[in-house]
Amino acid sequence: MENLRDVRGLRTDDGRIVRRAVLYRGETPRTPHAGRTGVAVWPPAVVVDLRTIAEAHLHGGGRHALDRPGTAVYSVPMGASLAPALSGAQTTDGDLTAAYRHLVRDAADAIAAIVGIVARAPGPALVHCTAGKDRTGIVVAVLLRAAGVRRDDVVADYLRTEENLPRLWAALRAAGVREPRNRALLGVQGPALEAVLDEVEAHPGGAAGWLATHGVDPADLDRFVARLVGPVAAEAA
Image 1: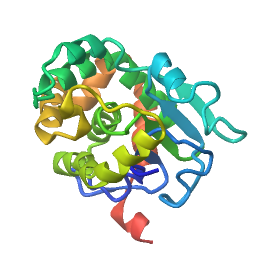
Image 2 (image 1 turned 90 degrees about the horizontal axis):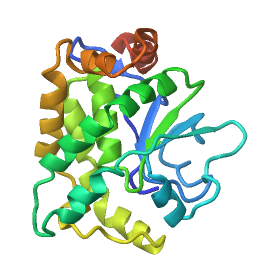
Image 3 (image 1 turned 90 degrees about the vertical axis):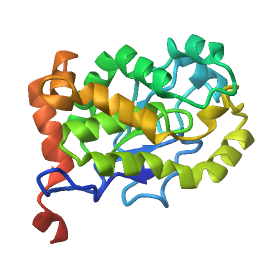
Image 4 (image 1 turned 135 degrees about the vertical axis):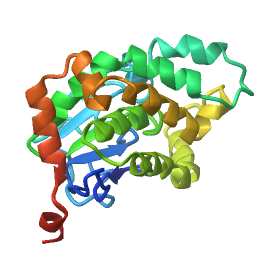
Protein backbone atom coordinates (compact mmCIF):
# COMPACT_ATOMS: atom_id res chain seq x y z
CA MET A 1 0.00 0.00 0.00
CA GLU A 2 1.42 3.33 -1.10
CA ASN A 3 -0.59 5.65 1.17
CA LEU A 4 -0.85 3.55 4.33
CA ARG A 5 0.28 5.03 7.61
CA ASP A 6 -0.23 4.91 11.35
CA VAL A 7 -1.23 8.30 12.80
CA ARG A 8 0.98 7.57 15.82
CA GLY A 9 3.06 10.33 17.34
CA LEU A 10 0.74 13.26 16.69
CA ARG A 11 0.48 15.62 19.66
CA THR A 12 -2.61 16.90 21.43
CA ASP A 13 -3.37 20.42 22.56
CA ASP A 14 -2.61 19.38 26.15
CA GLY A 15 0.73 17.74 25.34
CA ARG A 16 -0.21 14.08 25.07
CA ILE A 17 0.64 11.81 22.16
CA VAL A 18 -1.26 9.48 19.82
CA ARG A 19 -0.45 5.83 20.48
CA ARG A 20 0.85 3.53 17.78
CA ALA A 21 -1.17 0.69 16.27
CA VAL A 22 -4.56 2.19 17.12
CA LEU A 23 -5.62 4.12 14.02
CA TYR A 24 -4.33 3.52 10.49
CA ARG A 25 -5.33 5.30 7.30
CA GLY A 26 -4.75 4.37 3.68
CA GLU A 27 -6.06 3.37 0.28
CA THR A 28 -7.92 0.17 -0.55
CA PRO A 29 -5.80 -2.91 0.27
CA ARG A 30 -5.37 -5.11 -2.78
CA THR A 31 -4.13 -8.26 -1.03
CA PRO A 32 -4.26 -9.52 2.59
CA HIS A 33 -0.58 -8.71 3.07
CA ALA A 34 -0.50 -5.43 1.16
CA GLY A 35 0.28 -3.22 4.14
CA ARG A 36 2.38 -5.40 6.37
CA THR A 37 5.64 -3.48 5.85
CA GLY A 38 4.17 -0.04 6.47
CA VAL A 39 2.88 -0.39 10.03
CA ALA A 40 3.85 -2.19 13.23
CA VAL A 41 0.85 -4.55 13.47
CA TRP A 42 -0.82 -6.14 10.44
CA PRO A 43 -3.46 -7.08 9.53
CA PRO A 44 -5.68 -4.64 11.43
CA ALA A 45 -8.36 -5.95 13.74
CA VAL A 46 -11.00 -3.70 12.18
CA VAL A 47 -11.42 -2.18 8.72
CA VAL A 48 -13.73 0.75 7.96
CA ASP A 49 -14.33 0.79 4.19
CA LEU A 50 -15.63 4.19 3.02
CA ARG A 51 -16.11 3.20 -0.61
CA THR A 52 -19.57 3.17 -2.11
CA ILE A 53 -21.02 -0.19 -3.09
CA ALA A 54 -20.53 0.73 -6.75
CA GLU A 55 -16.85 1.53 -6.16
CA ALA A 56 -16.23 -1.67 -4.27
CA HIS A 57 -17.83 -3.67 -7.08
CA LEU A 58 -15.97 -1.76 -9.81
CA HIS A 59 -12.60 -2.05 -8.08
CA GLY A 60 -12.57 -5.77 -7.50
CA GLY A 61 -15.97 -6.54 -6.04
CA GLY A 62 -16.66 -9.62 -3.97
CA ARG A 63 -14.90 -10.17 -0.69
CA HIS A 64 -12.74 -7.45 0.84
CA ALA A 65 -9.04 -8.34 0.71
CA LEU A 66 -8.79 -8.12 4.52
CA ASP A 67 -12.02 -9.99 5.27
CA ARG A 68 -10.25 -12.87 6.96
CA PRO A 69 -10.40 -14.51 10.40
CA GLY A 70 -9.29 -11.98 13.01
CA THR A 71 -10.33 -8.91 10.99
CA ALA A 72 -13.82 -7.41 10.97
CA VAL A 73 -14.73 -5.31 7.92
CA TYR A 74 -17.37 -2.58 8.21
CA SER A 75 -18.77 -0.97 5.09
CA VAL A 76 -19.59 2.69 5.77
CA PRO A 77 -20.21 4.11 2.28
CA MET A 78 -19.48 7.80 1.84
CA GLY A 79 -19.50 10.05 -1.18
CA ALA A 80 -22.37 8.74 -3.31
CA SER A 81 -24.20 12.07 -3.09
CA LEU A 82 -20.97 13.89 -3.83
CA ALA A 83 -20.58 12.38 -7.29
CA PRO A 84 -23.06 14.71 -9.07
CA ALA A 85 -21.39 17.77 -7.52
CA LEU A 86 -17.97 16.69 -8.71
CA SER A 87 -19.07 15.59 -12.16
CA GLY A 88 -20.83 18.91 -12.61
CA ALA A 89 -17.72 20.84 -11.68
CA GLN A 90 -15.41 22.05 -14.41
CA THR A 91 -12.45 19.75 -14.77
CA THR A 92 -10.17 22.78 -14.45
CA ASP A 93 -11.71 23.84 -11.14
CA GLY A 94 -8.89 23.46 -8.64
CA ASP A 95 -10.81 24.23 -5.43
CA LEU A 96 -12.22 21.28 -3.47
CA THR A 97 -13.52 23.35 -0.57
CA ALA A 98 -17.21 23.14 -1.52
CA ALA A 99 -16.93 19.41 -2.21
CA TYR A 100 -15.24 18.75 1.13
CA ARG A 101 -17.86 20.76 3.01
CA HIS A 102 -20.64 18.94 1.20
CA LEU A 103 -19.11 15.59 2.12
CA VAL A 104 -18.64 16.29 5.81
CA ARG A 105 -22.23 17.53 6.11
CA ASP A 106 -23.67 14.61 4.16
CA ALA A 107 -21.60 12.02 6.04
CA ALA A 108 -21.87 13.47 9.55
CA ASP A 109 -23.89 10.58 10.99
CA ALA A 110 -21.56 8.04 9.37
CA ILE A 111 -18.49 9.74 10.84
CA ALA A 112 -20.12 9.65 14.29
CA ALA A 113 -20.78 5.92 13.84
CA ILE A 114 -17.14 5.30 12.91
CA VAL A 115 -16.07 6.61 16.32
CA GLY A 116 -17.93 3.73 17.93
CA ILE A 117 -16.42 1.18 15.56
CA VAL A 118 -12.87 2.35 16.28
CA ALA A 119 -13.55 2.73 20.00
CA ARG A 120 -14.57 -0.94 20.31
CA ALA A 121 -11.86 -2.35 18.07
CA PRO A 122 -9.77 -5.05 19.80
CA GLY A 123 -6.68 -3.90 17.89
CA PRO A 124 -5.62 -1.50 15.13
CA ALA A 125 -8.38 0.00 13.00
CA LEU A 126 -7.82 0.90 9.34
CA VAL A 127 -9.95 3.62 7.74
CA HIS A 128 -9.72 3.61 3.95
CA CYS A 129 -11.43 4.69 0.75
CA THR A 130 -10.15 4.16 -2.80
CA ALA A 131 -7.10 6.46 -2.65
CA GLY A 132 -7.04 7.13 1.09
CA LYS A 133 -6.88 10.90 0.76
CA ASP A 134 -10.21 12.77 0.51
CA ARG A 135 -12.90 10.84 2.38
CA THR A 136 -10.30 9.12 4.54
CA GLY A 137 -8.59 12.45 5.14
CA ILE A 138 -11.80 14.11 6.28
CA VAL A 139 -12.87 11.25 8.56
CA VAL A 140 -9.47 10.89 10.19
CA ALA A 141 -9.13 14.66 10.63
CA VAL A 142 -12.46 14.92 12.45
CA LEU A 143 -11.66 11.94 14.68
CA LEU A 144 -8.24 13.34 15.55
CA ARG A 145 -9.60 16.77 16.39
CA ALA A 146 -12.31 15.19 18.55
CA ALA A 147 -9.48 13.51 20.48
CA GLY A 148 -7.77 16.86 20.97
CA VAL A 149 -4.94 16.40 18.44
CA ARG A 150 -3.40 19.73 17.51
CA ARG A 151 -4.89 21.19 14.38
CA ASP A 152 -1.49 21.80 12.80
CA ASP A 153 -0.62 18.13 13.33
CA VAL A 154 -3.93 17.04 11.80
CA VAL A 155 -3.41 19.12 8.67
CA ALA A 156 0.23 18.03 8.38
CA ASP A 157 -0.84 14.36 8.52
CA TYR A 158 -3.40 14.97 5.76
CA LEU A 159 -0.74 16.65 3.61
CA ARG A 160 1.66 13.72 4.02
CA THR A 161 -0.32 12.05 1.24
CA GLU A 162 1.22 14.52 -1.21
CA GLU A 163 4.61 12.79 -1.11
CA ASN A 164 2.91 9.47 -1.87
CA LEU A 165 0.86 10.65 -4.85
CA PRO A 166 3.12 9.52 -7.74
CA ARG A 167 3.39 5.97 -6.36
CA LEU A 168 -0.24 5.94 -5.28
CA TRP A 169 -1.68 6.87 -8.68
CA ALA A 170 0.67 4.50 -10.46
CA ALA A 171 -0.57 1.65 -8.26
CA LEU A 172 -4.23 2.66 -8.66
CA ARG A 173 -3.93 2.84 -12.44
CA ALA A 174 -2.27 -0.58 -12.48
CA ALA A 175 -5.22 -1.90 -10.47
CA GLY A 176 -7.69 -0.53 -13.02
CA VAL A 177 -8.81 2.58 -11.13
CA ARG A 178 -9.52 5.43 -13.54
CA GLU A 179 -8.27 8.89 -12.71
CA PRO A 180 -11.03 11.38 -11.79
CA ARG A 181 -12.28 13.85 -14.40
CA ASN A 182 -11.86 16.69 -11.92
CA ARG A 183 -8.08 17.04 -11.94
CA ALA A 184 -8.14 18.62 -8.48
CA LEU A 185 -9.00 15.19 -7.10
CA LEU A 186 -5.60 13.90 -8.13
CA GLY A 187 -4.02 15.74 -5.20
CA VAL A 188 -4.68 17.04 -1.71
CA GLN A 189 -5.61 20.56 -0.62
CA GLY A 190 -4.85 21.91 2.81
CA PRO A 191 -7.28 24.85 2.51
CA ALA A 192 -10.16 22.47 1.73
CA LEU A 193 -9.48 20.44 4.86
CA GLU A 194 -9.04 23.64 6.89
CA ALA A 195 -12.52 24.72 5.76
CA VAL A 196 -13.97 21.43 7.03
CA LEU A 197 -12.23 21.87 10.37
CA ASP A 198 -13.44 25.47 10.61
CA GLU A 199 -17.01 24.27 10.18
CA VAL A 200 -16.74 21.35 12.59
CA GLU A 201 -14.90 23.31 15.27
CA ALA A 202 -17.38 26.20 15.12
CA HIS A 203 -19.90 23.86 16.73
CA PRO A 204 -20.40 24.27 20.50
CA GLY A 205 -17.96 21.82 22.04
CA GLY A 206 -15.80 21.74 18.93
CA ALA A 207 -15.32 18.50 17.01
CA ALA A 208 -16.48 16.41 19.96
CA GLY A 209 -19.64 18.48 20.24
CA TRP A 210 -20.24 18.17 16.51
CA LEU A 211 -19.99 14.39 16.75
CA ALA A 212 -22.34 14.36 19.74
CA THR A 213 -24.91 16.31 17.74
CA HIS A 214 -24.70 13.67 15.02
CA GLY A 215 -25.27 10.72 17.31
CA VAL A 216 -21.99 9.53 18.78
CA ASP A 217 -22.41 7.71 22.10
CA PRO A 218 -20.55 9.77 24.74
CA ALA A 219 -19.17 6.55 26.22
CA ASP A 220 -17.82 5.56 22.80
CA LEU A 221 -16.15 8.94 22.39
CA ASP A 222 -14.51 8.62 25.81
CA ARG A 223 -13.40 5.07 24.98
CA PHE A 224 -12.03 6.22 21.61
CA VAL A 225 -9.99 9.03 23.14
CA ALA A 226 -8.66 6.74 25.88
CA ARG A 227 -7.57 4.17 23.25
CA LEU A 228 -6.00 6.69 20.91
CA VAL A 229 -4.20 9.09 23.22
CA GLY A 230 -1.76 8.39 26.01
CA PRO A 231 0.68 10.42 28.13
CA VAL A 232 3.99 11.24 26.52
CA ALA A 233 5.85 9.55 29.37
CA ALA A 234 3.92 6.31 28.92
CA GLU A 235 4.63 6.27 25.18
CA ALA A 236 8.32 6.97 25.69
CA ALA A 237 8.53 4.11 28.17
